[in-house]
Length: 353
Image (cartoon, rainbow, N blue to C red):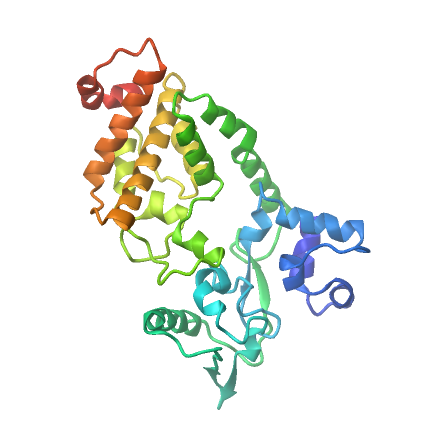
């Protein structure tokens, strides 16, 4: 079934693809459309495989290599080599464009073999949108548009860009082990933490927190989508909690406490499994899981204090707050836990390693 998805995406010139396109719609409809009455079971099955929420390996690892841009939707297709489309990344601009459904080839013209973008807006840009528009133009201008070159779909897992069943199978097996929602949430509910914190953790792992990227995706108007802490890149859960220069040091310190060295994923579910299960955690597994929740919860609270109360984000205070949270949860929930906070904070590595 994965091979059918790849063939449909990469063989646009084939007769059978053109027939399916006329019947069901093209690749963009496959990605963003909905099943309708009369669609075949085969078509529904491959669309369900592509869109399944617990294992999005096809959605995450297929991307366009731009040629002439005739087959690529400018706003809604992934052609910049990132996980986000332009609609998601620049939703504020998407809402005011007159070209929401246009292909790349319709977004400009060639002038003596040089491509010129031609953006048409419903209104003039506001002052606070100017910086965003400059960033937007710099990003799309970094990709050359070539008149006589066909657009090609790439399978990002393989270095040659070609899909193989073996690589997809490997991804499926690894992802199945990681994306077991029942197991991960069963683990969280068994932790000795407050119910409110469990709900926060569920929202984080499901990417339901109101980060700036998620607010833009929900058409909530904000003046900017850059990280509230560093102001350098887009604020999504992956960056904010695990990759921001003000938070990744907290995880390196935590790694030192568990006495391991190595890279950590920036995807919440992967990060949770890797930190809590991936380094031989067995005896102190629940304590390590509780620490993961305490630190992410502390990062989120201090981020909100910065936004809504103007308090500076101090990584040292975030760490101290997380240490206190983890200790207070154990103190309140575990009758056998009698360790003082002073001893806990001074010897936390002994409880996590």
